[in-house]
Image 1 (tube, rainbow, N blue to C red):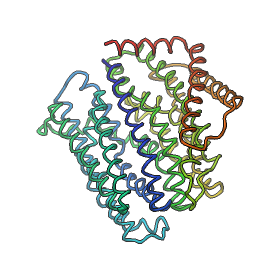
Image 2: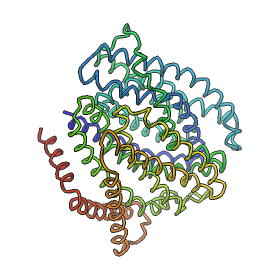
Image 3: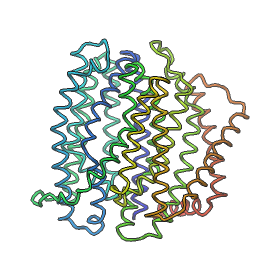
Image 4: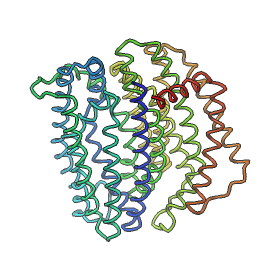
Length: 500
């Protein structure tokens, strides 16, 4: 059952990421064509600034998930209701704080970004983009957490797929009709409000949640221990755009956002294929299945390594041809930056490697034990990014992120040597060398083969398929030789699931 649910979660998440990537290719290009890079940068920057309110979550999401694993495993509905009520009270307080934050941001964003756009325009855009975030905090987050803890996140994911498709279709129609960006984003916000409302109703009915059960605040008392993890995760995903907005301006934010659309989309696809394991790990730990945990984690590591090498190496080879085609005709800023693109690929690949270890530690509830490392990662990321951006420009923020992620990854490797897995660090370094070997072989093969630069989407797609097949063949072959038991085990488990 755990494998089947994990597969459902991974497949639905993969579909969501593909839909999101397609939407991400369509809408920003139309916005840039209609309104210019500065407006596209403003939308991306405001979205990131609004997201800073999530720092107030103080890690409650992850702590609530960890607290729910055991009562869900033993169907303790009263305990589930108590934890849920405590979590919902907390998030609704954040929702009201978010209203105040959005009002302040609407007043000050023009000054923060240094844009020449009218104050009435930027303030209206902030308030419009804020509405769906408020609905998510007030109605939807706790419902999503319950589904994640019960390995049923595919329910929320399928709903998100529908919402993304609806938003893309309606936005395209409005843009083609010549509507202003304010009208387009107002329609988008209205669509995104539907998801948390529906999720809230579904979860209440499915889990027989009772409002009369007192909030179990004791169950989420570790939230401040989870605060560091939450800050580190948030800074990795969001601090760069804030720094670029302040130091370089909104046109550079648009450049960053286009690269993130591509590389971040690949990251999300990889995570969706390998990220269904946290709830399963939590279930194994709750039931003291330590041998099963070690075996399954090693298999997921192998699967993750294969996907990371294949997808990110292919991305590094193809990204610049794609951006040249995508940004053709855009003249207000250059979008081709080789070093920046390569560092972006490395940064997100490292993040994906780290996430498997991060998921295991969160599933075990080891927030307090690892919180210092989380704060160190966040501090390194912010300090180095602020310093490097003044010396190296936009690539400086990525340099800070790469160094911070590498430090945190090493900390996780050393921590798992002493607890949870109790395995030697050389297991990780052997896998890292295997991955680097695969990357080298793929690059050599693609250099030898007579590929030409793609100049149309059709020629780029053909080249992408060829490169992906080469990368897949080499990486799967090497892992079948070095990690044969894992590869065979993954194949057997997938076969068993599909035969049910």
